[in-house]
Amino acid sequence: MNQNILPQGDYIRQLLVKSNISISNINILLRDKGVFLGHNEKNNSVPLLMKSIISPNDYKELYDTQKSKEERVKYKTSSIKCKLDFDLTDLLGARIDLNALIIDKHTYKPNFKVIGTPSFFFESENIGHFEYTIERENALNDWTNNTTFHKGAITFNKISEEEVQISVQENSTSKETVEVNNIVMSILKERMNSKSIISSSNDIISVKFNHFDNLSRVKFFNSFTGNFHDSLDFTSITDIDLYLDENVVSHKDVKIFLDEIDNLKLSGKGLQNHMLLTDDKYYSKLIFGAIKLRYKVNYAGVKGSVLINLGFQEYVKNKNENSDFEISIDIVLNKEFKNEKNINTIRKKFLEIFEKKKVESYDEFKIV
Image 1 (cartoon, rainbow, N blue to C red):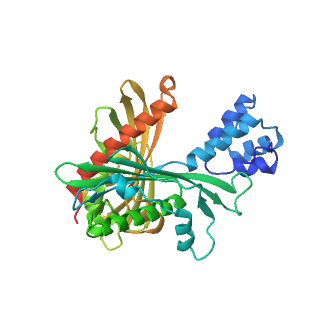
Image 2 (tube, rainbow, N blue to C red):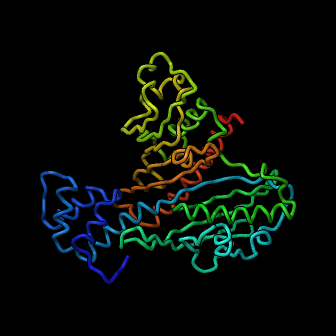
Image 3 (cartoon, rainbow, N blue to C red):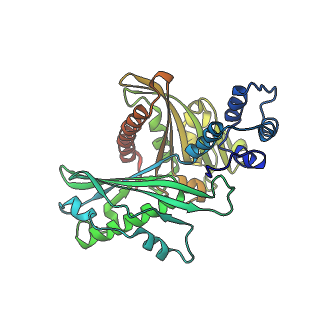
């Protein structure tokens, strides 16, 4: 964002019309200015703000609102079975020239680069973190975000119990950070192969879309709708990305309804009670891509709500049946508990809770 320009007119319009600036965001700003509209639509509110003076603080709040929604962190986890024990610092210590590898991968000059020369740092001898920021340019975007910054990270946790394995967590905030994570992982896999720590890619285990059939995939998603931890109280399924398998005949109860539809985007307050989800006789026709679940939260006395996004996002976007399972978490705490420390603590704890539940459900419902 250009800090030297106080936007008005078309400059402010370019930001306000974005889908991640909601009508509610705009109306709150107007109410603060003493403006109340009978019709809460952008067609009414945006022209008013275009003609008014937006203070630097107001504009920063709007800009940060859309930026925070774009920057939602997606988490992908996997496990690596190891043939022998090893020193994690020795494996991760060597420098990786990411920008050179990014350039080598692209036929044309890429529109992003990694800032600086990030490297692994170690929380302990068994936990290593790799954090970085990319700078991305997009000349087609408006002036508010033609240069944007996105964070990514990878965490390696070596576990030495009955057998040696590595738990990997990949964090991404854009498709470019996914690409950088893939580059880092490919380098580390080469190192593990060369040191005979792993023997093949089969030693790397992750939850993928094609590890389930339609029936088991729905059951896998449904397993998250219970109260499987004391600090979480399941409320509802709010959204489902649902597709219909053309190779499966619809159950007679819903045949007329489903046979005219290719896919469904279900939204509601209690989708777990929808007829398609309450009886497994319908499941073989249904292809679940992703769901959103809402829970009430009471963790160590901190109360609020959390919206968990679970799904195979590459299947939703591109029908990629090799898509990995991803998790993202939106936390809304009650006003008296709302601070960055509480949010970070709860996010870290819930990632652990959902990772454990994911592994349990995967072991129960996978068909591969």
